[in-house]
Length: 261
Image 1 (cartoon, rainbow, N blue to C red):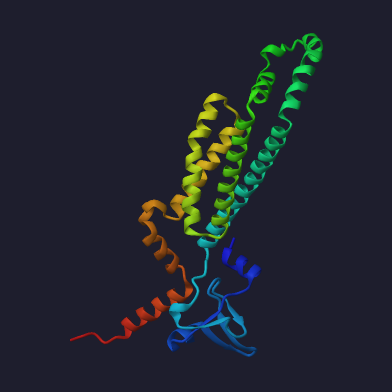
Image 2: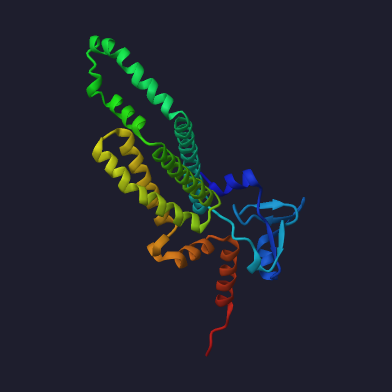
């Protein structure tokens, strides 16, 4: 898949007319239908006046090729984070509603549980040893203040996910660091949960989070990995079509420069 062409098809071409004459000539072409300018993203010539103009140093650094693919991956992760945030907010709302009717629900549970015990015995279900019943009793025995603390913890978790998703969607450097730190912090918890009870869903979730951390940290050269920020910025600028053309002009100038005697 050509990510550059795909992005231009969705958002339009990015053309720019540099003030430098030599560079301007390399990006402009005359056609029977009028002037055409080379797109800084996909490299194709497109008819019409340029979208921007000015010194070459002020030209936008446009995401191209692999950088566009990385952006798509990061935004996919952002959508998953937002989806999880919605689920966590739903859980917080459920706990809050339960907190408001805590005493009534606990009384109803204590009154109705003995009524189903004869049926449970006929089905061979021992309610006293049931994990579901034990969990319900633990939750119902929780204090109102404890439930309020759970609500606040869930809201804080949802806020972290929303901020993380925003940073990744906007392709911000701080968002990438934030995502790696937050996701890494929860990996030990997920490992502990798997140790308590192994389930395919928990294992898949753990592997997905580990893969996301490694992908973001390595591809974006975070924490000094693979040369750090300096190498990351150099990689971005090397992919810039305008800077490629500038480098080509510089090489051509050196090739035509007379050798010193």
